Length: 461
Ligand code: TYD
Ligand code: MG
Image (cartoon, rainbow, N blue to C red; front, side, top):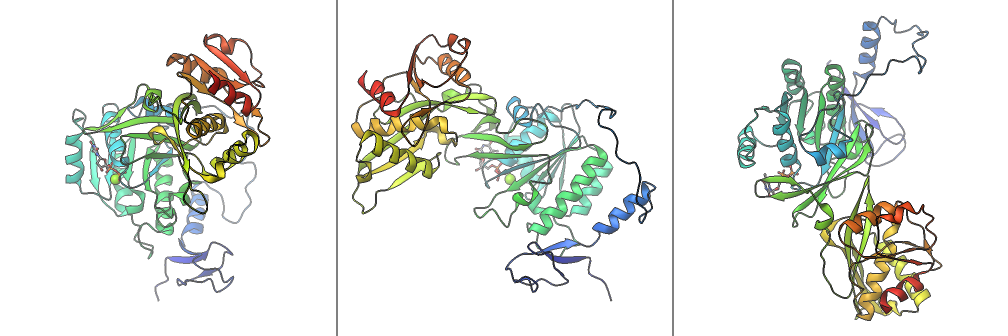
C-alpha cells in the first residue's frame, strides 16, 4: 500500500488524521483540519546527519556567545525605486523573503515587474509567473517601456520545477507572482489553500536561505482574508508589505507591516499611470486638496519616518433615519463615534440628530489619535457651516473629558506643514517640547488645552 505523503492536522487541538473531515473528530471544531507534509521530521533528521549530529544524541555546545559572534554587514540590493527601498528599510536583503500582499488588481504585478526590470541592470533576476502566461507578462513589460534590461521569465505553477529552475539559474533575485498559484504536487489540497501556500513558501524559503537569493512573493488578500491566506505566511517571511489604494483613484501606498530589516509603518507612495507606476516625489501635495469649504480641516500624520499633510472632510446634515448614519472612510468608525460623543457632551452640539460622514482625501488610512482634533474641527465646521481659517493645521489627541492630549513628533509635523506653506497651527498646550522644534515653524502657534478652546479659537478668527 502506498503511504500518503501528508496528514491532516487540526489547528486547534493538534489531532492528526489521514483524511480530510469538515469537523475534527477529536475536539469537534469545524474547518480546522489543514493538510501537512509528512516529510518534516525526516528532513530534520537528514539535516542533522549532514551536520554530523546523530539523530538520537543530544548535541553539546552548539550555542555560541553573542559577543564573540562575527558580524556580517548586510548588503542590500536596490529595488530600483527609492520609495520601495525606503519601505524595505534600505533595499532587499539577500536570503530574505518578502511578501507583497494586496487586493487583486491593485498593481502588485506591475510594481514587481517594473522593479524586476530596473534591478535586472545590476542583478540577475528571475520572474516566475504562475498566474499569467509569459506572453501576457511580455505585453505588460512592453507597455511599461522599461525594456533596456533583460530578465529571465518562467511561466510555471509546479513548485518542484520552480525550485529546480532557481537552483539551475542561481539568480540574485526571484519574484513569485503569486504564491497562491503555486502548487506542490505532494499535497492533495487545492492551490491557494492554507496547506499549499504554507508548504510552497517554506520550501522556497529554505532554498532562498541556502542560495542567498532575495525572494519576493506576491500574495492576494481576499475579502475574508482566509482562503488565499497571506496571513498564514506572516510569521514565516522576513517582511510583509501591503500594497493598498483605491482602485478608482490613481495613487497607491506601499506599507511595511512587518520588517525584520527595517522600520515598520514606513510608507512608499506611487501613482498608477498608463505606463505603469511612478514614484510620487511630494506626497503631501497628493493628499492636500486645498479645498476651501466648510467641513474641511488639515492635519499632519506621521507615518513611519515621515510626515504627511492630509486633508479631512466632514459632512454633517440633519438625519431622516431613526438612528443617524455615521460613515468614515480612512478612519475607524469607532473613533468617529467617540469624537462625536465628546463633541456632543463637551460642546453641547446635538449631533445625535445629524448624519455624519467623514473622509480622508486621497483614500489614505489614518489610525493615529493625533488626527482627533482635525476630525473634530472638520465636524464642527460642517455642522456650523463656517469655514475653518485658511492654511491652518490641527493637531491633538482628544481625551474623553474633552481635554487635548499630547501628540508625538510635533516638530517634524510642523516642519512639514511649514514647508507646504501653512502659517497657523492649533496644538495641545501640554506638548512639552524643546524650543528648537518650533524654530522652523515661524507662523502662528496656538496652544489650546481643551477641545472647546481649540474650536473656539479656530472658528472665531
Ligand atoms: P496588476 O499589476 O495586474 O494588479 P495585481 O497584480 O495586483 O492583480 O494591475 C492591474 C491594474 O493596473 C489594471 O487594472 C490596469 C492597471 N494598469 C495601469 O493603469 N497602467 C499600467 O501601466 C499597467 C501595467 C496596469
Ligand atoms: Mg497580478
